[in-house]
Length: 153
Image (tube, rainbow, N blue to C red; front, side, top):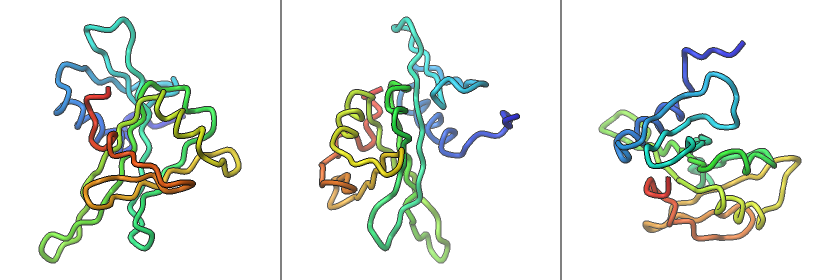
């Protein structure tokens, strides 16, 4: 049985960010697997918006995050939010800053079509460079339009 009383941290952070950036949306956590981590209710829509959340730390050695998505899952949610924990030093204490890539399903499917599968998964390496973000796993693609793009939900 899954523990429904403790959320994945990234799911909580995404829900919190949605409430800040899109207060007109109501956020719900499904109790059973519906192919999404969060459900959003928009009074202007007839059905909920399905959100899939993926998280990764930042690999300083390579300058990227590393997110994986099982092949076939790109069709299960309406929007995918990739959360990267970027290291940040505050005084003598090391902390992390959350960084978000918000990608609608149709655009994620286009990205997956350009990727090679490793076993049954797609890998995404998001690399921030000079105010832009590139997906660099298989070919270098500018994905800056999805960086903090909460308006795409």
